[in-house]
Length: 245
Image 1 (cartoon, rainbow, N blue to C red):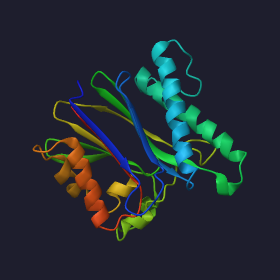
Image 2 (cartoon, rainbow, N blue to C red; image 1 turned 45 degrees about the vertical axis):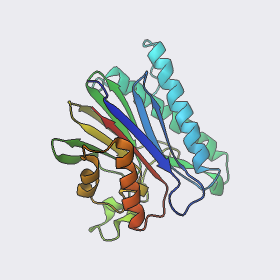
Image 3 (tube, one colour; image 1 turned 135 degrees about the vertical axis):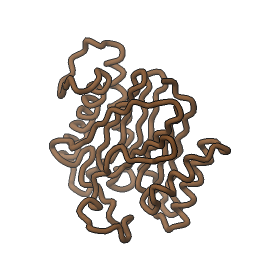
């Protein structure tokens, strides 16, 4: 399955001076990532830079040497590429966590993230923290997995944007808590990755309304989502990635 269109944008948002969000993509290795860093200026953004470099480096090594040992994890449930992605995430997490242990608690950083790699028609997606992944298929939009945030502990969605604090993420705990899904993509599918600065004040149907417009390109779709969230009072950094098959 060929990726037909791709777009990604990140912005500091309407009020913040520093963007702790970030993204990375590698068309050659069919790898796509977004991150939502936390810890403050010079901390969360640096953490995201470290994650992009560490994850990309390990996965690239696997691509060049498929007999390379997978040091942390292996499961026959997932494709070899998926296993390599999980190991890359774990390796990067342990690097961030080890660095945090050597710092004062006020200087520690971390990040939520969505990581994905494609092999033929299978997209393996790993998520940790409060980023979201959706698939839009044949007029329906569905979450690929549930973001791990305080919203899970709430009994209602009143002011849900105040409950998006992540319960997991890179660098937070000794072990990385993550979810993995393998999605078989089909022609016409759209896969959307979002940080909470975009989805926090929007309903899924509102996201779908922007995403499914065929008359505009993907960059304009992302701009519309950013503007809609900001008009609702968003105060956070924003990142959106769209893959169209």
